[in-house]
Image (cartoon, rainbow, N blue to C red; front, side, top):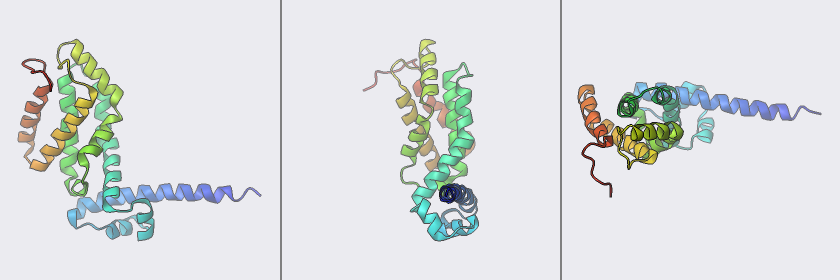
Length: 195
């Protein structure tokens, strides 16, 4: 009989659907309830039991990381695609930093659950390594970016800048000002040798 593989596939599809429902529910619950949101609230909103939620996400950190990854993919990833179309590398990176910062500010209640936000941001940023390397190389060739920076430097720089900016909870106008000042560190004019 060939009936046994079908239930296994159905379970995998069901599990996948459960994960999607849980992540979507977590977005809503964290947005509405902030730090007061519980995983039980998320499970109820998703229409799954606590055991199902914990099977996929053993703790609040794991769930928050999955939600952040989903939000990064839908809301920040398109900015990376635009990187290669922009001839101004500093402005391109500033666009990425600004978009990521805006998302982080909007998702502050969720992201406060992450102890490793900067590291996760670097990991998500690294998915775009080839795009970032191309922009860095193009900017260096045009003399618009420091010759001694790498894609890794940019990823870590963006993670530090965005997480610090969000932690300070500044108004949008001040965020833009400080992000601009920090992005000037990528400029070769007046650059000092890196340690």
